[in-house]
Length: 380
Ligand SMILES: *Cc1c(COP(=O)(O)O)cnc(C)c1O
Image 1 (cartoon, protein in one colour):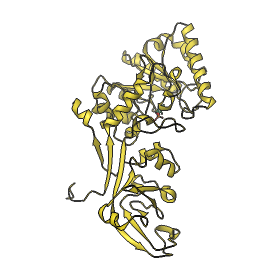
Image 2 (tube, helix red, strand yellow; image 1 turned 180 degrees about the vertical axis):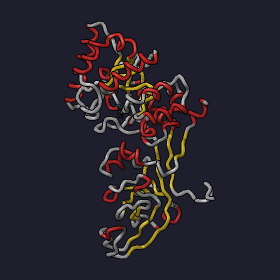
Image 3 (cartoon, helix red, strand yellow; image 1 turned 90 degrees about the vertical axis):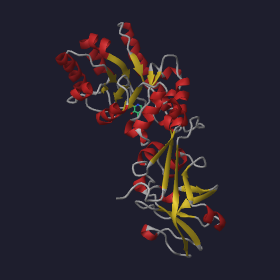
Image 4 (cartoon, helix red, strand yellow; image 1 turned 45 degrees about the horizontal axis):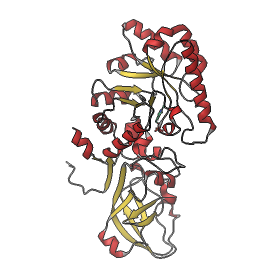
């Protein structure tokens, strides 16, 4: 049997739970009074481990979390205390009613089918199921249109008044501070809330994701839903990142080989050395989340020396050009830093021509995650 100790460690992905907690506390400190900072831990907390991340945040007083699917909600329910609210943003309430009830999950109702099922189910069970209603204000993804919502209220005012926790909408361009779409969505959302208030229907509201928080206090309302910023992704790419870095990824060199002039490297044979050089091969490929699009312009470091990907990234291997690294250093140091203080998650996502969201969610399914959590442990 292959046990953990047989294989020498080839890759190391660390996740700093203390940094996630600090990022959460920082985001909280930016909010208007009484606004709840309720993390998004969908997609296994963007690949970093929903259980570990949520438990760490819970130990610091966080008690509302967002996931995407019913399955994610059910899984997370087992890891968290009963009194924690778990909001399921992107799934069917319709035909899943019993699961939401049994696992005490809060549904986001996105369609007319969902809201009718919700109404009916509560009557059948004679039980209150708190929910959130999503309203589309211009993203044109999920949610009722403003008109549909107003119609719904005309027929179900009491139900909505008593059992709806928040009305929710989602911003499409929040990471672009100057995009006029932000203000347009805010205006539509605010106008709706005001119209309801005139009818003495005062509902709580939630609009902002990570980037939305930084658009300013007007966008905060009663709850915000940050994901990316907690994990160290810069919410406003045109400004300096104010969040702490959360992950590091490094890989140990498997082999170093000399490559002659005009030899090609890797699949396809279209990467050539025009002088004699040296490559290092590592056990990290696109199956580990080292995206294949990094083949062209991916970078890494040995000590402080920048090195480049050479040739195409394979499924579980990659090759780096280490011709510029002195022999003395190569002999001493066999770790290559992929994500580190020299190159942050947003830098490497840029090299891969994608966003950190995609990079993070691709990492960590095959590489074992190691957690750093001094503060969190002290709390337990
Ligand atoms: C994913 C998601 C979020 C979190 O967005 P970040 O940009 O990661 O902060 C918030 N709200 C909704 C509806 C989402 O789908």
